[in-house]
Structures are given as structure tokens and as C-alpha cells.
Length: 485
Ligand SMILES: [Fe+2]
Figure (cartoon, rainbow, N blue to C red):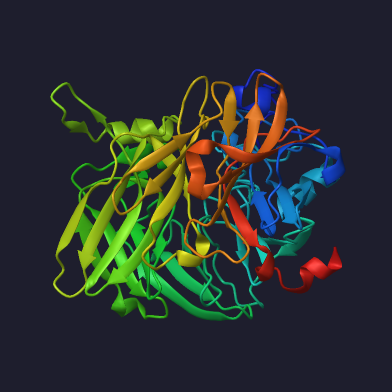
């Protein structure tokens, strides 16, 4: 039996435990009066900007990887021209075990798995994404884990979500809520046949579909699409190296001769209804939108951009390096499939920006959508977002905004204005680290005047570390929870 990783403290020399990547130790509530307000706070902003991310509770064992940190939610609740900031750890079962022990009990993704815990060989931190469904937040984990529920305003943990006792699978990080039906659509993936499932939970928490999705072997998809009618699942040629896996190592491998395959499944369809469409080999970390247009199904997303040689030819093997070493490089891209004839087409929408961590107006997801908002990716000294980009998905046109050097953004969701009359009528909201001032801020940008910069900045009296994914939880979708505040 392999022993748990030996305690080998590396804090604070790990770059993902320093600067604004360093974890914070307190759970806080910051009232509006304790923030410095620069500009004018919008009065038509009603909802919660909430972001998930890693924030380890204890000194890590072994080789700390950024993905290993315990999940922590940071939220800003906007209402009536005021804002309140909160942060809370996600009380996962592993978090509770480590709290009780007073120390870390799991190593990280670069360490040996815990052979004494076949139920939990790697710590499920629920640190990756956060999604609003049926008035509550659900937090998720990138490898496929147990979803945890949280109060969208207080961020208090409400325990593991078992979907009224009907959940029989894990769920992957990038599940989606269709705001037109309040369906929650998810997939899982693992190493056991059939390697993937698609599931649907309705607004009452009942599971209305669980469909096995047969893949040729274990895969490592990160995201999917939903249209109003279909779920589109990924079979991409970036896989775990099986030889390395047998020796207990984690190593990626890109199979350059395998196609990219998208499985198109009616949301409540049976396994036999899945149709697969082939595209050029690629890897996609994050999708944007999919919608039906007659017989065509269109999909947009951020496609990993391989290195190119001096002749302009792509080196597909570089995708392994890009994904394995935090060298994230992606371009806005489209794929289309004719569901009647099987014809496909694909191409780049923009070749200018290394853009990732896309957001959009959630109410338009699954229908034709014109705008997406991405973070510009920078890698010095480690991955960071020096600015934000507004894309026109119809034309590929873009607008860029940054406060300047030394400002680091977060994934920045779109928040529709109260009574919004068009798709981009609202705000893009982001935590921002102002390095020169050594302070954390919340920037609120008018999406229709994107390059004008923030209409309001909230300077927080506390530090908000770098994080992962975020969402906007619309005030009118929080049910009666607002009344409890
Ligand atoms: Fe992600």
C-alpha cells in the first residue's frame, strides 16, 4: 500500500503560494461603509458576483499545485446601490476531515494518491466553478467531484448536493443552468466504461435525465455546450498517457491523428440518439455558446492555439506542453455541424487575442448570442489576466480594456442591468488586484461603453486572492433568500 505523502513543507517558495496567490486565513463580511467607492455605484445592479478558487486551509503536503487549494467563495452582493463583500470556505467532506485533524491529510495532484482512501484518493476541493441553480449556488471540481450547495448571499455551505437522493455520478466542473427552464445540465467523466454521462436536474431538484455517453476510452474533457435543445459533449484527443498512469504518474498526451469529436445529444435523449461530428484535432478548455439555426448547430469557444513553426504550420504536440505547464494560449473559434447532412465547418473568429475564461449574458445561452467577455491571458511571472476583452461573436470584432500595468483581473461575468433592454445592457464585474497600491478592488464596467473603463471601483479593506471561475447570480433568481438578509 502506498503511504500518504510525507510532510515536506515547501511554503512559501511555491509561486502559487506567494503574492496574491497566497491563501487568506479569515472569513469576512465587509459592509459598504467600509469600502472606498470611486465613481458612481450603479443602482440598477441587483444580484451577486461570486467567484470560486483555491485557498488551502493548511500548509500543503508535498508539491503544491495551484489546483490543489481548498475551495473558497468570494462574493459581492449588490442591491439598491450598495454592496457587501463576503468570503467563505466550501465545507467539503475533505475540508472537514482536515479541519478536525488540524493539518493537511492529502497531497496534491503532483503527489501519489492516497491508497488508504480508495473512496477519495485525491482531495475533492470543489474549488473550480460556481453555478446558480434553483436559487442556490453549486460548487464543482474540475476532475468530476461531488457538488456542494451554498447560500448565494451569505455563501454559507449547505452541504453536499445529492439531487434529492438521485445522484449516482460525480459531476464535472462546467455544468450549465439553462435560465429559460432552470434545467441544470451536467456531465461526468472517469476511467470506467462508458467513461461519461450526461444528466439533467430540473428546478425542483429532480433528475429528469441521466444518459450514458460511450467514449472510445477515458478522456479528460473540461467543458461542454448546451443549446436550448441539445447537450454537446467533447471527445478530444488530449488524453492521459496510459503508460505513465500505470506507473502512478500524471502525464498528458495529444494524439495528433485523432479527430476532435462532438457528441450531440437531445437534452432528454437516450444514448442511442447521440450523433458524433468530427473536426480538426484540438483541445478546448472553455466553451462559450451553442445554438440551433435551421439544420445547423453552431458552437463557439476558446480553442487552444498550438505553437507554429517558421512556415506557419501548427505543432499539435505543443498542445500537451501548453496544457501541462500552465502556458494557456487560446483563440476565439467556431465550429458548425449540419444535423441533417452531417456537413461541418470551423474556423478562427479572432487571431489577435490570447483570450480565455469567457463569460456572457446567461439569459441568452443556448440561443444566438452576440457578445462574450474574456480575460486576456498573460504568463509573466505566472498566469494572470492583465485586461478584459469584449468580443462580437458575429464578426470577431473586439474591444479591450485594462487599467494599465500592475492590474490583474479575475473571470468577469456579465451582470444584466435591472430591466435590461438589450443583450449587453448591463455591467462586467471583476475582482481586480491593484498591485501598485497593494489592494483588492471590485471594478464595474458598463458593457455598452466597455473601453471607457469602470463606472465604479470598490476598494476593499481586505485581500482577495487570485481565483478560478465566477458567475453572476441574478437577484430575481434568488427566490425569497433576499428577504432573509
Ligand atoms: Fe474551467
